[in-house]
Length: 423
Image (cartoon, rainbow, N blue to C red; front, side, top):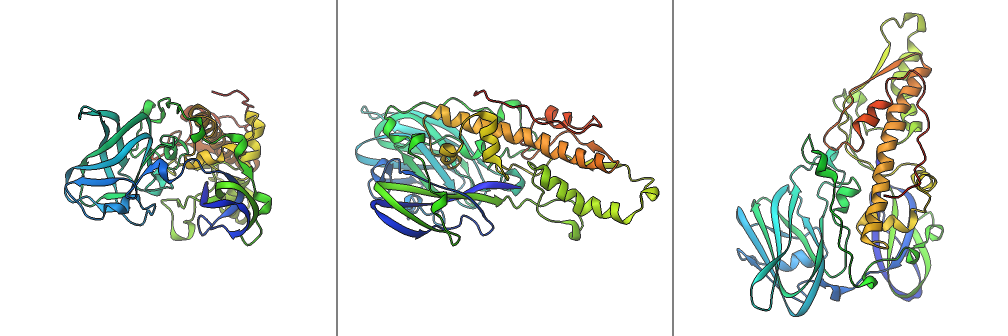
């Protein structure tokens, strides 16, 4: 099972560069390199460099939560309520809030308030910070950022309150920004899934996001440049950078690292790709194929059924040929929208949300067509039927009825329908 991982660098133009781009993870398959004008700059974010930051209870080292380094941060000094206060000399317009917690589980209620001219605070946003379950099968990004889109709020003081915190947890980064971000993009890309076994019907529905009044702060699809052909086999990019600051993403597939269980040590390994008939067939051949090769057909009197246990392996959002199949299905090129995987808003909030809806729709389809349907096909080729536990939890990325619908018939699963409409 794989997901779209990326590393990010920024460069200043105009100049020619020949620069090594970092690999996002150790195990990594290159797919695309894209570049685009950086939305906003340091003046579009509040930090210890342009604001006064205070906390209650009082803490030292608050600059660690705005230093752009997730390896540094603060720990909550006590259980209960924790507040951060950002004060600026000039009015600041906030459009997004990003919280990156330290590597310790946290479940808290949060409120962001802005101070008005009369001295009273008004609520800008109320939301939940739920990173209570950090198991890999509840999201391959175990401590994924919590991103909230804000209705435009202009003030010289902002107050962030977290309730029910524990001293074992903390904050690595707090980014109050004038640049819009895509709300809950970690959840929408299946990087972080529901923390309990039984999410309700509304837990994967998200509100419509307010569009910013300043369109220069969001990325336009035509500004995204494909530089894939200019990356050599050693990961070095050669590019004549245009004027201005540019963000470069080196993107590709990385394993989610979820392993199968329960299983004997000899049969334990990374979960098979749930969106590829090719790899499902390969998996079948390496395990059940060995049994079939070693037991003559006339002796297989009790070996009749292949069982698929309940789905408990979390999400994935990329596989071989995903981008090409996406364009064929939906009728538009996904490449300009790839920065949305990292929370960038492309074209509009609505267009970015619609793109990730299409991604999740395709993931759900392929989990049914390629995993359940694919295993059924290869099983039938060897005279075996399949039996399925038609449900899943701990981050099930599909639909139960569609998932189970590819089980009963003894004929091979058909091709998925073409979906060219947009939500």
